Image (cartoon, rainbow, N blue to C red):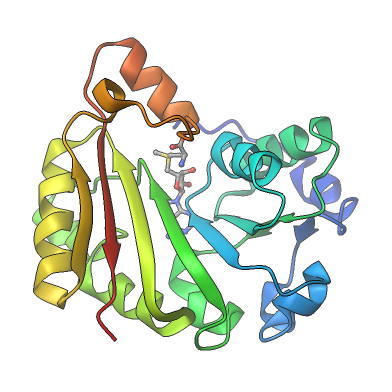
Length: 214
Ligand code: SAM
């Protein structure tokens, strides 16, 4: 993703605390209270410009959605889109790193986790940065409810294969695997920005749903 420096990003983010939570660690254990209901909480790590998480929030008003993105310059695009969508009350955006999940959420506080077109980090020495590396799976298992699910889409075959192995080795159950999601195109599929870009080029989209066995 090309990053343009946006010097106004910080001020803009601070102007919208009703949708963008700047200090999410302070909400730990209080996310249901913040949403004002006991609906399930679904989190996307690496939300990018927000198309998926905002689309999901609009399509599923009985689920609370949280999009996490670690770059200010990308997060402001998601924030702009959320404002255009009239700030759905079941949506929050967090400017944070996914490796801080256990500082942000209490054990078992979230119900499902989404990863979409995560950075592939192809070099072996960078494997620990992949969002499906064992160390991240361990964080997800902690913050998810027992038997919580991870849903993952990507265009990157090597990352997909790596993730299948990583999740299986971790003891997760694979509940669904598609090697060409757009052939089946489930009715409720909400496309991410990257999904639109890669599928327009004719590339297959890989998708899996996995579940912790705890
Ligand atoms: N999910 C979006 C989509 O499918 O269109 C964006 C995909 S983009 C390739 C990956 C995004 O994940 C980038 O915006 C990147 O900054 C973000 N990201 C990568 N690692 C992250 C991490 N550890 N915590 C939070 N965001 C992360």
